[in-house]
Image (cartoon, rainbow, N blue to C red; front, side, top):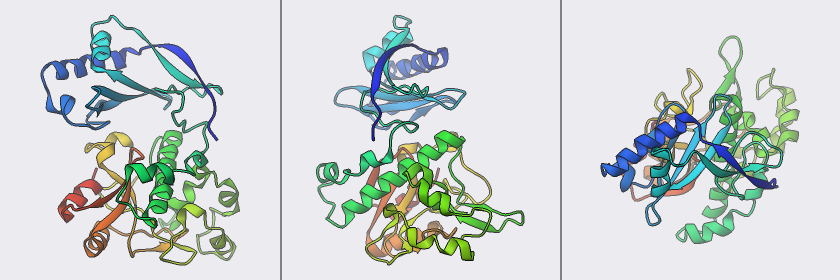
Length: 318
């Protein structure tokens, strides 16, 4: 499930130190984005992003992305940022998987996109009882499954350098397969993934046989298999444009403020079909039911309620 990690001392890259100098200056200047708004990505540059994640304990979270797409995660106090900025600190202790995948993490129990199994979140419903006390017994399974889907989308990006396409296409630009099929290896569903003939359309005679092997994360209580309510939101301003594959560096609104996928209320589709609703359809579904279970690009899940439809649209846009 989760691979063991050991602590290592790492030398801070100059690009990260330079970013810390900018963060330190913003803290010193009392910049609102750096001192009073909790978000893990309000401040970003080409290879580093992060921000204030725990205002009570004055802790900041950062991710440094190397040129080989391996990531280093940091959790720092304001005084540690100051020490890095003035050059007093040049090394920090981070955690590395025993497999030495090249990534470093802020704690021993951090999730590694390369080495750990998505199944470590099988019991995610339990913490949701604490973090989402207003969620009912039907909503918590949706949130737990959507959490896995969100992490699989992130894992795809870490491995391919971009988010999955809404659909892959043939030579004539005809959609062949859904993103839900493309992320199967990152859901530990290699068996189902290997059943699919990606050279044929999703509804070919051969691929129709795979419909009945719907992964459990796509099961919906309100519709029968092979249909699912787990959908992307397609649009030129979302992370699912039809013209190209989006990268996280394009997200200017912040990954913790940008929706990756939703558990629609009434909208549904065959889990293998390369078809998903657009922004207007999702907004209408939200208005009709007053809530929308969503996973954000940073992987966190929440039930959006008590917001205007305009605010929902903002959360869908990069």
